Amino acid sequence: MKSSLPGNNTLVRVENITPFGIWLLIKRKEYFLDFDIFPYFREQSIKAVKNITLLHDVHLYWPDLDIDLEIDNLENPGKYPLISQASNKGARTTKNISRTDRAPSVDA
Image 1 (cartoon, helix red, strand yellow):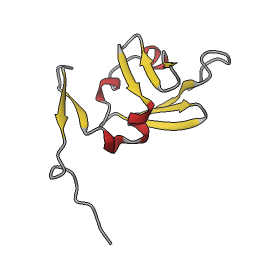
Image 2: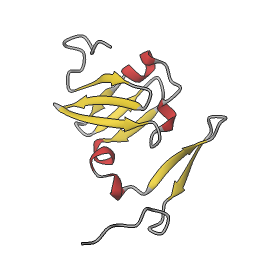
Image 3: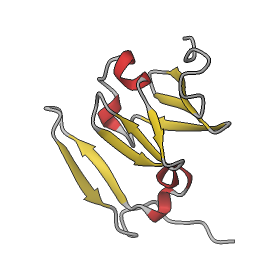
C-alpha cells in the first residue's frame, strides 16, 4: 500500500492496513490501531480510513467516519478504561473494564 502523497498532511498518515489493524505514522512515531480495540475501523473503506487529519497537534480526526481520537489514547491506553464494543449490527457501545476484568498483573 502506498503512503499519502508528499505534502498531504505530512504530520499524520496511514502507513499500512492489515487484517489485524491500521499502522499510523504521527509526527515520525508509529502507532498501531488494533481492530480488536478499535473495531469501528474494521469494515470501513480504505479511502475513508486514509482520510485522516491531525488537529491541534494532539487530536486525530477521520471526517468521513466522524471518528475522533486523542494521541494520548494511543500512548497511554491504561488511562482510558472504556473500550468500544461494536455489535454485529455496527452499533457502538462502551464497556468499562474494571481491574477484576483484566488479566492479573505479574508482580516480581
